[in-house]
Image (cartoon, rainbow, N blue to C red; front, side):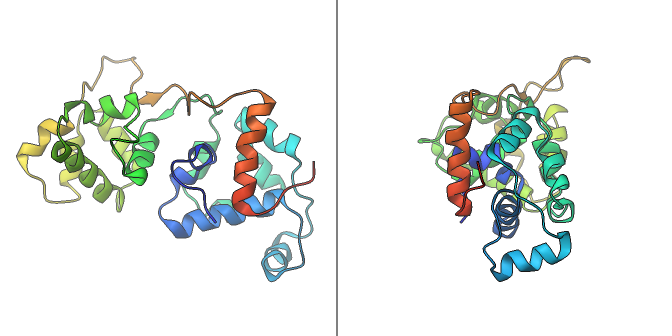
Length: 233
């Protein structure tokens, strides 16, 4: 079972980078192989025939790699390079330490997946970067939500991010669906900024993520609850 988009670990462990439920399920499989021992089932036998017998990562190995932005290297060391390479945006996302910064398009994607703009409003970076600060009614809010949701069904999210920081969202969206000129004001942002000024980056993954081991243990326990198992401590 994959995490819910409102859960912290859906963002923190890279489910936000997945393009649909099939990729999310593949990521669950990836973490299951990384963190849990074989129970003799076909799932483990199938994958272990390809990678050989590999001991699962311990909790300490996992949280240290998470904090350092080296989860990809840990996966590769456990024979999971081929499997994780099927998720094209995972490596760049997990290679950033949890305090970031990361491109605000990932926060946009989480906001769109939750689809509750009043109960779960967009992060400040999304508000500014993707024009929601211009929206004052339900119709105005849902219009760019539908636009970005449609665009992301076919577009590379990092290309959307590049259009964001170039101040070119409306033109970029026009390449993916029929747009109406009146929507352009809803997608206006303050970019591009002056050369050398970083933009479109969220300084933290989540303000509520506690960086001490206790906070990380809670975060990881929710991930392991999703994959249905626990690695050896």
